[in-house]
Image 1: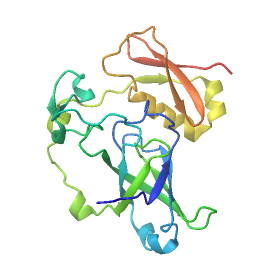
Image 2: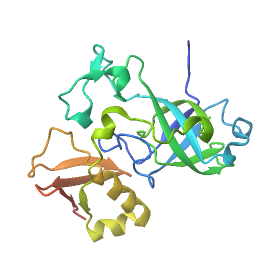
Image 3: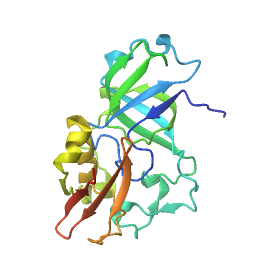
Image 4: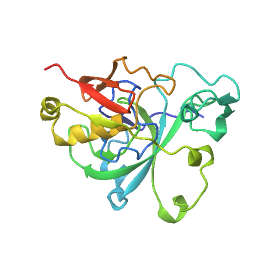
Length: 224
């Protein structure tokens, strides 16, 4: 089967580091979907504005290593426990295909690049190829009370994030809040807890550096 991208995703993340581990974890995180020819047409999107959520089917294009074996080590379990690859959402898969549910914020119908989708809550890197888009349908896609395996026993723990006022003024209110919620999820590898280590990640065209102390306080460093 030969599949080609129907669109390219654009987001504040130019590298994998810092991207939320799942879609929807940072609801304010905005991205855009720009279509490729021949899908750069309003006809291909007719009726899409009537849906609140969309499924994006995309490629783990930044992963240079394919899955090795039938098991993987989920970061949520500390990187030491192995589970079957099909029992996880690891990016290292037999076929590097991702699936994300995003909220449709708006459709910009007339731009120099054709119709553009503005979406919220995506977990995609800038430049990610999108293979297909499907509407989220409540009666088929929503399963209240469903079990989520090992995820149910490991609730998300969020950090206390401190962003300097000077940086917040530069970023603006919307980007500052998106950055705060991204950092609350703790972008560090699960096995790294050195309070003296400075981490860095690109976000919105800026290099963001931070440290995390022993009390789970994250401090963003800023040099104007």
